[in-house]
Image 1: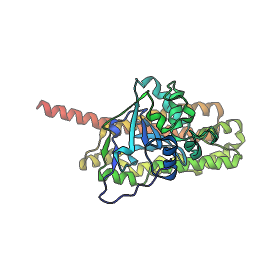
Image 2: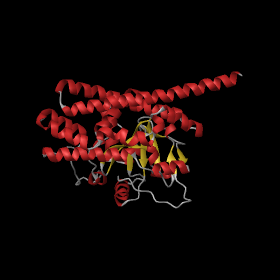
Image 3: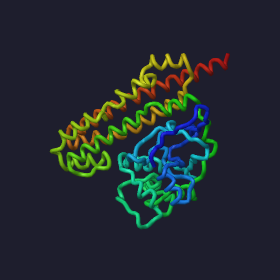
Image 4: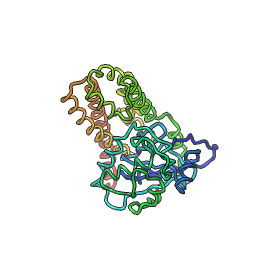
Length: 345
């Protein structure tokens, strides 16, 4: 599915998911109205044409026209509450969630197949098995973790997910969007910039190596066996902007998350959801820490410049998000202690 730019009248109501009511592993079904979305709905006899999976506080991973990427759930608006449905695994997902998240994360950068998405129920349409479409990505992530949501994960459709006996609908998680939420959804997107950098890196390395890389893991696997490409791949990595995305884009835009003075100034003006902010930074810290450990192992074993750059990137990210999570936790504890003191009086 391609994300469509929503156009609406100034007084038109729009809806948004309440991320506070979502959990890791939740599946989000969406209805689009493009020709390919309508083709998917027609071919599968479903109201929904797209599926994505919630994998951290406020973030999802989904297969779109430019490949598999992570996106901010708060950047998607809906014209009707019926345009979206949230499904949740009926049993305790805790023992499986790390493997589910690991599976979808490993697919980031993989190309999207429109033909395969539309043709999943039409036997004569085939495509490269490594290419993804939205519902296949979701079903395979659960299958990789040992959960069979549907009979055939490789050709799963949004309709199959909706009808899965392993899933149940999550109610009361769709709200009328505020003007502030609408403005945020339409604002410049860090993850879009990240996508462009990732795709540039994969595409340029593919051209140089005369090979077809679908993910960053493909680039790294090739480099391990072809170390003479180290300097060239490192140059592309630096040129892509991938290494400085946080410093160049996210930190200047959201200074309050990374600077004590900026946070205190903002709190003097307005209330913000400190718990949501803390959970976001905590999850980012945990995710980047796992990647940092892997990057350290690669660097020790291979001693290549490319992996030195990746190792340095995740060392910075781990420290930045750890300090940011700590920053919000301190404010939460201070707020709670102030409330307790007021009640005792």
